[in-house]
Image 1 (cartoon, rainbow, N blue to C red):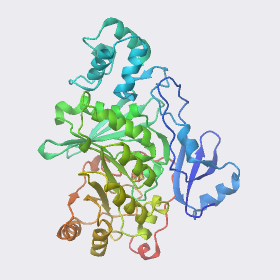
Image 2: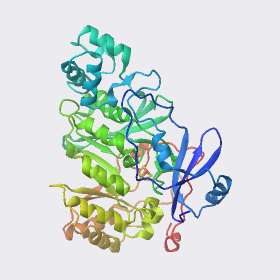
Image 3: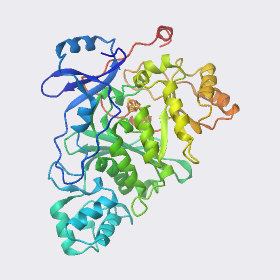
Image 4: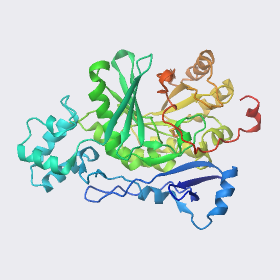
Length: 447
Ligand code: SF4
């Protein structure tokens, strides 16, 4: 057993926990529409240190039941079928897949295009058959028999004092996700979508991370968050221009569905977001990051948050598998082949942990040779958090050091935090939570 990170699974119903290998590099391709889905698994996955008490207890309880995370990947609903009705989920298909499906039912490709435009364009964002005006009667009948329009049910919308909206959705299996719409000055409005229910990455500063991972979202469930946001809020907040995959979950842990959802979002006959305005964020899953850069032309954000492995191992346990050196060298290599492409580094500023002037200087060295922009993000406190936000004044000092060295750097202050809609505040942890990791000794006094 590796003594670094481990993955652990709590199997629903059986009340047993099993140790998992950290084999997160291989992802199984999605099922296409004719394959019926299995029921989504009710279980949690955490990533954390082998030094915790829970680990030894569980490792003894089930030594032969070790499973890799690949088992989880293959057991997850990834296809385009609604598990409730066995109908095809229209929003789980790329245009080419929809066209084939429509043809397989005896209709022309032109009808697929008309349907696609009603699902995603022309200010219609159709949610049901009644909203498909202008489509052939027989075609509509076929759709009512074999197709499902909605993957999400709207539960509630909370509006924060700064105008940020948090939209709560219920999934078909009863689980919940959250989506945030952030209106900005200058006509830019961003929708922040979730890619998983919970998250396995256990970043120590993140509320969502305390949920563990319940399951991946399907492509339809991801796409529909953006469709819903436009449908519900365009008249209030204006055109929604940007998408960030920075809601609940580690998007690249669900890479198959995330790439598919991003493809659907940028389709020019549909939602037509510019690829440069669709940003997928990662905590640093290196193999998936490479694959994303090869297969997608959407933007990439990397959540960096530390300038040493000591700190990053503590606040982002994924660093124990892919450390700073590996992560940054991969970006340096891969971006050599991407023309006119800059990665966005996100840096959540934690008082006394990663916000010194020495950190700023180290950060300048770390990103040398990588075409990039840097977002300095203020930490959003939540209940039970041991971290404190860096003061605005100190954030500006830090920013100035980077700017003077020639970095492109922005300050991102909190949005929507009075409604728990800000970065790192989404979701609702249950009773079973991944353990807190111990701070390196030199930080224990500071916290
Ligand atoms: S910061 Fe992102 S990757 Fe880390 S636990 Fe939170 S949701 Fe997961």
